[in-house]
Image (cartoon, rainbow, N blue to C red; front, side):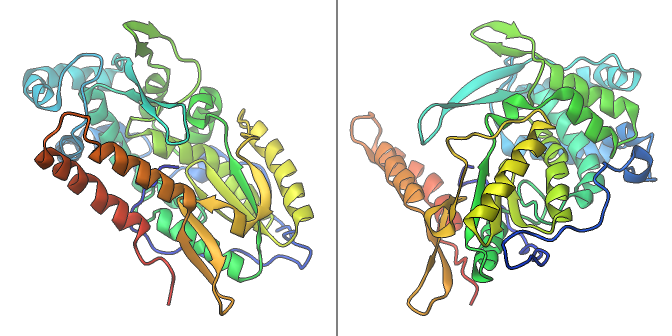
Length: 379
């Protein structure tokens, strides 16, 4: 998970008690997902699309899209150009959204280098589709987010990576020093559309909204001038993707809760804390089966069961000081990333002036400092 994906939050709630063998006690509760009539809210079940397209909501959505800036999608229109175009085109787009004939544009595939090697594929929607998705998000998130597990910290209002690592610190301080560090293999590329839409329909009743989200999932991907149809995955880059990821992964969160486990999840990174290696291995085997039911696979090369001191989580590491207290520090990997980035920004062979280098540093360093140098250890 990238270090910059942090937002302010309150610390999470402590987990339920577990027995001394490191295995969590089961909680007597049904495993089946709640039926739609139980999970859906009773306010505006059939008018969510109208709420999303309300003028006030669209104005807020446009301000967010404009503030985020971002590049153009497959239509080549920038944010500024789209704003001008929408003055005449919006009435027809709104009509299509209401009558169900609107078809989202393909997303533009962009690969960005990952610090550990390889590339991460982003799908950049057009500015118009980012506006529509943002408008939907503003209506859906207040209704859907409260139903998520308290152990989930990623991309949620009032929560961030700092809360996740602080909660992990509490678990280890309580004596749960073995961590099941789970990483999902190409999660955003492997999401099953059918399974995701089934879980979303348990929370959202408006069929027009569900149909529109399905079309966003199935919108093609343009790479090297060719459009490829997508049968699975929810590309990173659209406003709705983080919310949809939490909708899908919340099912495993609830199963962990029912077993009373101590855990934290940030997007597709999940850490479960137990008291013994043997207990951790059993939990990992069980998690493999849970994720398989969602058509997801664990990345075996990055997943492990081990002592918490030897694992990193969201750029932090845990250690004991001379007084035996569990503390947080910046991981060696995060420091390596920082040095690598600073070398790139300050190298003398890139043909930039000293003023340009200074501007780049001013854009990068404060964000890194705000995340990694923020006092995270409770007094």
